[in-house]
Amino acid sequence: MLWVDVALKTQEMLLSSSSVIQIRTERMARAGLTPSEDDLVEFQLMGQEKLAAASESGTAIVNQMHTTGYALLNRSIRHWLSGATAWAGLATSVTPAQAAVHSHELFNAGHRAIATATQVSSASARVVQRGLKPIHAKATANARRLGAQPEA
Image 1 (cartoon, rainbow, N blue to C red):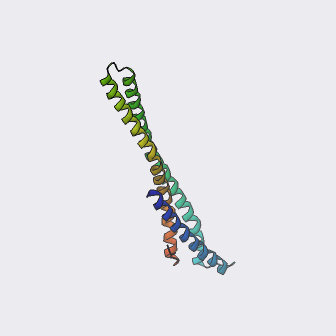
Image 2 (tube, rainbow, N blue to C red):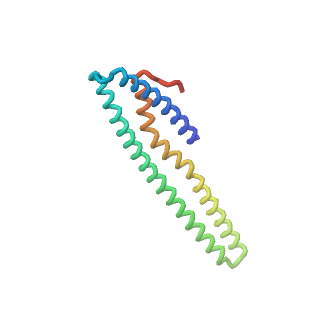
Image 3 (cartoon, rainbow, N blue to C red):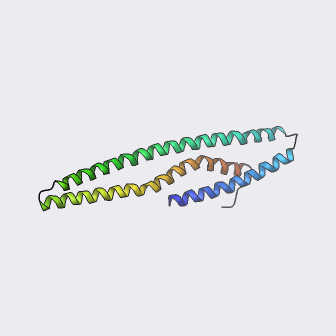
């Protein structure tokens, strides 16, 4: 569901952005070589907003990647170590009962490692969500402010 949310937010952002671009382009064309004070403010705002949204987006992506990457790396190392411990225990088992216990531990460690690996997709979606959020917010706010609310 995380990727569905990303797709829906991206679609809404693209629709809002295209509406805002159309309105601003028409405004620039009407202003021609003699833009009003309001036009100049709006035109300057375009650049400032893009820089601010891009900066906020980049920061959000880095923060989310750091948090997610650290958590996944930490979990992966723990699973690898528990797997290595279980494997060593299995290799040094002297009785069938010990071998069964260590085999079970090795299976569980492998299962946890696979579960952690499958979390990479959802972690990636969260990174994309965090990066998209400021850009989506600015695009949809501009569409509302300029009176071009897109149909979603």
